[in-house]
Amino acid sequence: MADMNGFVVAAYIVMWVGLIGYGVRLHRVFREARRRLDDMSREGRKT
Amino acid sequence: MSHAMPLEAERLSNAIAKERSIEWLGAIALLAVIGAQLAGVLNSPPDRDMGHLQKIMYVHVPSAWNAFVAFFVVAIASLLYLWKGKEQYDLVAASAAEVGTLFTGLTLVLGSIWGRPTWGVWWTWDPRLTSTAVLFLIFVGYLALRSFVEDADRRAQWSAAVGLLGALNVPIVYMSVKWWRTLHQMQSNPSTVDPEYVVGLRTNGIAVLLLLIYFIVKRYRAARMERLSEHLAESAALEGRRA
Amino acid sequence: MSFSHDLRRVRAIIWKDLTTERRSKAGFNAVAFLGVLILLLFGFALGPDAEALREAATGALWLAILFSGVLAFNRSYQLELDGAALEPLLLYPAPRWTIFAGKFAANLLFVLLVEVIVVPVAIILFQVKSLAGWAPAMGVMLLGTIGFVALGTFYASMASRSRAREVLLPLLLFPMLVPVLLASAEATSSLLAGNPMQDAGAWVKLLIAFDVIFVVASFFAFDHVIEV
Image (cartoon, rainbow over all chains, first blue to last red; front, side, top):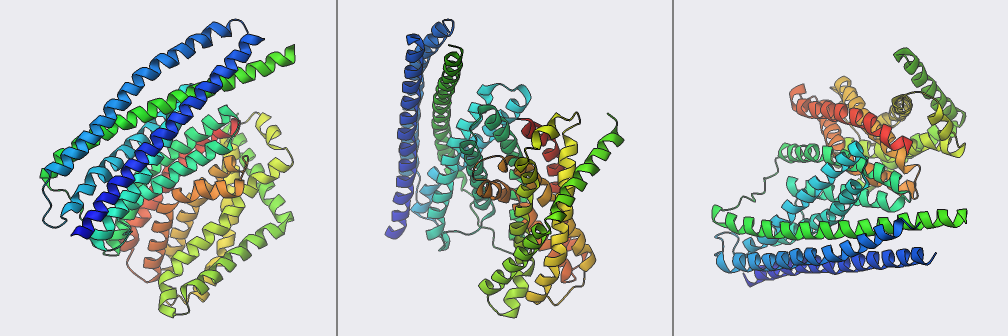
C-alpha cells in the first residue's frame, strides 16, 4: 500500500515539474520575444 | 518608415500592459490548480480497489481533457486560417499546438504511472491512451514541420493543412484502436470513475483549463511579438536596399 | 477549361512521372528490393517459429510496404525540384487538382507494382498456409494502398520541399496511417484465413470511409500547399 503512495507522489511531481517547467520556459520565450522587438524597433528609430 | 514607429511603439506599450493582466490569470490559475488538487487529495476517501492510486486521476484526467481542448483549438484555428488567411489564426494554432503537446505528453506519462501499479505494466495499449499517443505524434509532427520551414506564409499554410488533416483523423484512429482491442478480446481496462469522484475531477479540470488558457494566450503574445520583429527586420532590409 | 482537357493533363502528368521513373528503372528495382529486404529482416527479428511468423505475416507485409513505399513519394517531387520544373508546372493555367491527381495515380501504380513483388515474397517467407479469401484480400490491399498513397503524395508535396525531408515525411505520414495499418492488416489476415466477409466487414467499411475522407481532404489541401 505504501508502495502505491509512491506512485501517487511521483504522479504529482511529474505534473508540477511539467507545468512549472513549461511556465518558466514560456516566461523566457516571452522575455526574449519582447527584448528582440525592443531591439528591432530601437534600430528602426535610429535610421 | 516614420509611419511604422508610432504603431509599434503603441504595440509595445500594449504588450506590456496586457502582460500584467495575463499574469493575473496565471496567478489565479495556479492557485486554482493547487486548491483543486488539495481539495481532491484531502477530501476523497481511498477507493476500495485502487486505494490512494485513484488520486492520480486528479492530474491525469484534467491533462487529457485539456490536451484535447488544445487540439480542438488547433483544428479550429487551422480551419480559420485556411479560410480567412489572417496570420493571427496561424499563431493561435501554433501556440495551442505547443501547449497541447505539453499536456498530451503529461497525459501519457501520468497514464503510465497509474497503469504500472494498477495492471502491473507501464503500457497496456488501452484505446484512449493509445489514441493519445498517436495524437502526441501528430502534434510533434506539426511542430517539426513548423521548425523546418523558414518562410512564414508557407509555414502557416502548410501547418494549417497538416493540423486540419490531423484533426480529421483523431476520431478514426480512436475507433480503429478500439476495434482492434476488442477484436483480440483484450480485457477493456475499466477506468470508469465512481460518481463521488466526479466533482473533484471537474474542479481540477476547470483549474487546469484556466492554466491552459493562460499558457496559450501568453505563448500567442510572444509569437505575435516574434512575428512583429520579423516584419520589422524585413522592412528594414528593404529600406536598406533602397538606401 | 473543360473537364476532358483537365483529364488529358492528368494523363500527361502520370505518363511523365512514370516514364521518368522507368528510365531510371533502378528506382523501382531498388524500392521493390528494399521491400523484400525489410520482410527478410522482420523474419529474422520475429524468429523462425512458423506459427509466430504466420501470426505476424500481414503486419510485416504492410510495414514492408509502408517503409519502402515512402521512398516513392518524395521521389515523385524530386524530379520537379531537381530540374526546377515545379514553377513552370504551376505557371501553366490549369487547376491544381490535376497535378495531385496525376502524381497520386502515378504513385498508386508504382506502389501497386511494388506490392506485386512483395506480397508473394511475404507469403513464402512467412509461411502463410491459407489463401482462401485471396480475392477480397487483394481488394483490401488496394483500399489500404489508396489511403497510403493519397496521404503520402500529399505530405510529400511539403516534405520534399523542406529541410530534413527524409525524416519529415515519415514523421508526418505514419501517425496518420494507423487506421490503415490496423484495418488492412486485420482484414487481410481474416480474409486469407477464410473467415467470412462479416469479420472483415467492419474494417473494410473503415478503410472505405478513410479513403473517401482523406482522398477528398488531400485534394483540397493540396491546392493550399502547392502554391506557397
